[in-house]
Structure formats: C-alpha cells, structure tokens
Image (cartoon, rainbow over all chains, first blue to last red; front, side, top):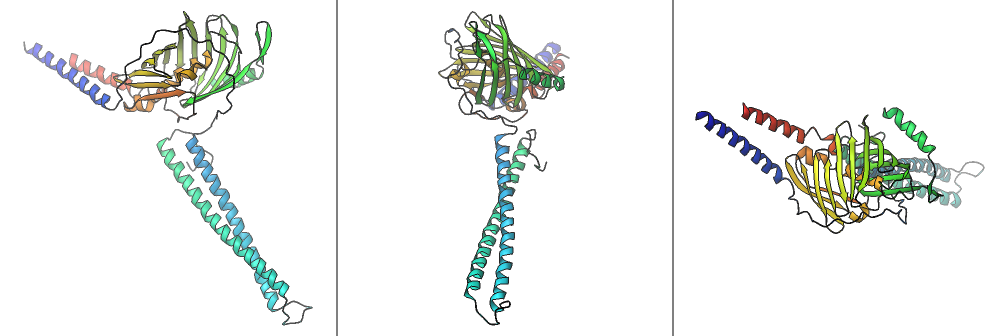
Length: 173
Length: 243
C-alpha cells in the first residue's frame, strides 16, 4: 500500500514538475495562431523572372559592422585630411611670418624702411589662408577623431553582442 | 574534404556549360539573385526551363550559393529525372550536405535529406501551395497559407510558438532547386532564441528587403543547448522516478 502511494506521489510530482516547466517556458513564447486549412492547389510552374534581380548584396560581414567600419574609415580620412590641412596651415603661417618680416625689413636692393603694399597684400592673403587651413584642419582632425572613436565604440558594442561575427581588418580584437 | 572540394567545384563551375538544350535549341543558362529576410542567394548557370523537379529532365542545374540565416551555403544542382539533387556544404563545417526535391501528384513538393550531417539536421518538408509542414532538425512546422504569408506553429522540444513565413508569392518565384535549400535553411533561424533561450517567435520571409543574420544563430548550432538538454533532464527525472 505504501509502495503504491509512494509511486503515485512520485509520478504525480514528476508530471507536475514537467507541466510547470512547460508552462514557464511557454510564458516566453507567442501563442501560435490557428493554422488556416485551405484545399490543395496544383503547384505553380516555375518561369524565370522577367526582371533579373541584381540588387542583392553578398556581404562578408554584417551590415552593422560594415556601417561601423565605414564610420571608422570616414573618421580616419577626415582626421588625415585635417592634420594635413593643419600642416599646410602651419607652412603658410611661417610663410606669412616671413613676409611680415620682409615688410618691416625689406631685403636688398630695396632701401631700409621702404613700404611695399604688394608684400603687405600678399602677407594678408597668405596669413588668411593659413588661418583658414588651420581652422578647417583643426575641425576636420577633431571631428575625424570623434567619428573614428564613435565607429570603434559601436563596433566594440556590436562585437560584444555578436562575438562570432566576422570582423573587419584592424578591428582591435 | 571541403578544402579540396571547393576549389574543384570552382574549377568545374568555370568550365560549366553556358547554354542548355530546350526543345532542341540551345538557350542561355540563367544567373539570378534572390533575397529575403534573412537570406541572399545567387543561382548561377541554372537551367532556363527546369519545369517540375520530377519532370524527367536530366541535366546540370547550375550552382546555388549565398547566405541563408547566417549560414554560408554552396550547392551543386543536378536534375536527375524524377527528382532534383543538391550536393554541397553549409558554413565552415567539414561535413557535406545532400538534399533532394521532388513533386508528388502535382500538389506536394517534398524536400528531404540532410542539411548538415555534422549536427544531424535532417530535412523532411512537405511544401504545398497552401501549406508548409514537416521537420527540420528538431523542429516541427505546421503552417497554412493566409494571404501572402504562411502562419502556424513551430514545435521545438517542449515549447510551441507562433511561426510566420512572409512572402508566400515570392517563395514561388524561386526555382524548385533554390526552394529546396533556402526554405530548410531559413527554417533553422532563431536557434539562439528558440533552442538556446526557449523564448520568442519565428518570423522569416521571401522577397522584399534583404536582411542579414549573424553567424551561428541557426538551430544547427544550438541542437545541444535546448532540446537535447531538456530531453536529457527529462530522461534523468524519469529514471529517478522509475527507481
């Protein structure tokens, strides 16, 4: 009698546990809709499509990773252009300084103290160009660095979420 | 094996015929791309008029390659009279894959075989104009047509959840050989959610905007995590209850 009671208890408890597990798992799922029951129809005969699709993208990495990589590349290019521009601005500034020096102390054969408005105009043009290059270059350099950092940050976040996905070159992982 | 087979396949495809005989006349073979959510495949050198996969045609059917649900696929197609055979590889697995597709009584397209022999993902699907039923690995699908989609359920181990395949009309724009690989591979999607975390719903689609899925989300990589573990747990519980 005790054996029967024990086995009944065990069977009941195990089935209850299984039922509870199923219920708890099904909480996270979506109840399936009723399956439409339509009569069978003849299978359609396949014909080549009238317009061949050429829009497909065969990617080596996920679109998210590709976008992040593009952001990084844009950042690198912008920053590179920015630093090049800053360098050019520096060269122009040195040239403007040299012209300014010539303006106060004109080289021979011009006599000392002679004012040449042409050199002043040239100095102004070069100096303005230098400031423009320095300003634009500075913005590009800082902006490019920010873009690169944002791309790398997004790439790192995506990689942490999907560690198995292929990575671009020099991803840092 | 793949190391030797893929270069051989590439070399053979370079020598693949560019025309096929249709009604005694040579016709150019077709190159087509098909996209969906989430897949992109290219059918290269396809027969211009394959007809039914069981229509009696005996010829080379070209090649199908691309990415379906994060799985890189490469298949050779052969029209073999009463059926169409596909042989190839899925992802970086060293094991090969064999699929067959045939029409039965003009209303049922049956896709059978092994999607991935390493994980033992068997395929037995019955594709009809108004229904998709069958098994892919440890999943059982029962879907009926509702407008331009198939809706119904997928049973994964102990859980049953809603399943939707959008783009029913676009599904039938794929040649039968492409259906035979894209549909089973697509039905392995959401392995990380369904098998791995026992939650979520199943939604894939044909046509429309191409989407991309990450690596190793297919259920062929999750056969050990969900169903098998719960089966082992249940077996252990039953054994304990029995003793």
